[in-house]
Length: 84
Image: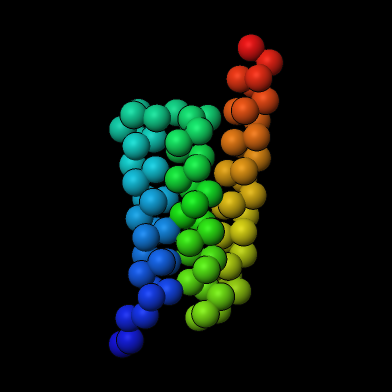
């Protein structure tokens, strides 16, 4: 098995998403916390980069939705803070 730079990028993305989820379950962050949402969004982007070079449609679609949902949550969080 070859391990390329894009495999490393994808693995870092997965690690970011897993750490974010772990912090959520440990109640160290809330689901609307900007750092949680940014970790998820960044992780999804990194996995998508890795998938561009070794494409898998199912995984790519999952990451697109993960990114969109994270960005939606981040926008919602920012709008709520701006209204306060």
